[in-house]
Length: 132
Image (tube, rainbow, N blue to C red):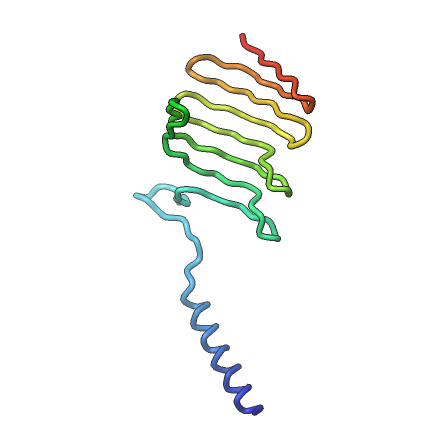
């Protein structure tokens, strides 16, 4: 019985070494003598528990309730409860920054083609919009 256990362990060790040597680490691509960059359609950062803590994603154009929202890129920084605390976005019609706390409300700073504004919402539900 002990010989079988040793043989199975040795086989597992060989398989593990073969698999580890065939893994390719993430590397930057060199394009026409330019600096190396990482390319992809998104990026996610997780903590030691495997929870998503930050992401950069591309969003295709979307139509919702008869309104067409343009394509854009969104950076989200997420707290340990899974709630986004910081959002930074850019799209064809402008950009925006949102700072929020699930219990304490939020603040948005938006710059759009139609004009910019600041929106603040308190925990009691009161909302104020500041426009130039």
